[in-house]
Image (cartoon, rainbow, N blue to C red; front, side):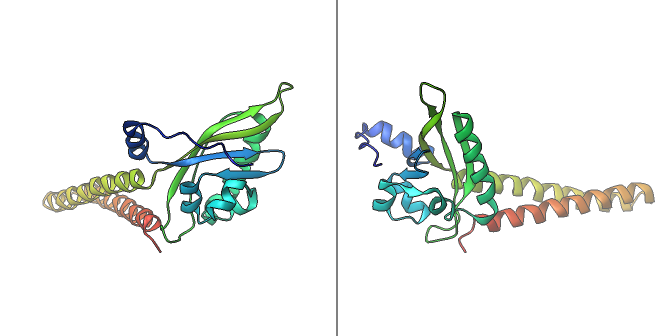
Length: 192
């Protein structure tokens, strides 16, 4: 079940696709349970591009996902296959040569004339850079909050108000939890 060749796009369209994170396309044959992927998308997942062009079993595709995302995506694919219509799913890849990547598949599950879903097709987008930039911005904000909370704590000490000190201490603890959460999130984006 190989995809028809994708025609060459004008340079400005190719540049726009690359800037948007576009990494390829997919086609899902629901009756055969196989997913065909274009070469760049297959390579990101660590699947042989020639094999992927012919279509790989759904299990081979799911095996290339981060273990924490596999069951959710499998359930989402089954639900979308049953219902038909628009499809969108985000997942992380396994750590490999490219490191852990955050990808999104977007497309549509088509139905036959009797309303039964028969195949799906769509695109894949690499969200990794967007996720990293968002994480860095949030981490900077949390660090600024921590600096302000530390300054506030020293100001409160001068007032000799234990109840106010307790509130600021609680705020500092919550900010610490938020910093730890961002540090864990940054580790998920680093190559292992």
